[in-house]
Image (cartoon, rainbow, N blue to C red; front, top):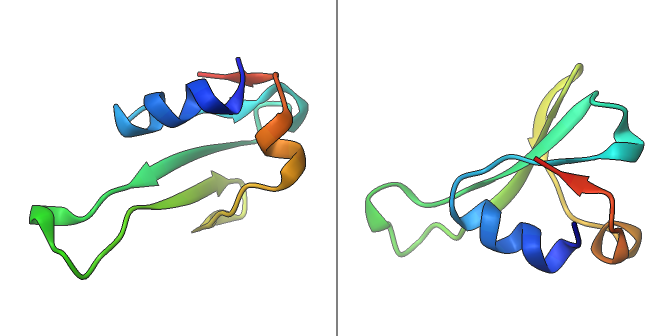
Length: 68
């Protein structure tokens, strides 16, 4: 699937990865707890080295190998 589709799935609390990542990591979206207006949604990537903030690259945004 493409990145546009993944945005809607992230909003629905799904976590996804790319086939090229060989199942070693996945990305999710954290949303503010309790509607806190000072906290914006952000992406995180969880893999074998732990969890960290994630920012999609141009390659990620144009990739079509996204999967749930």
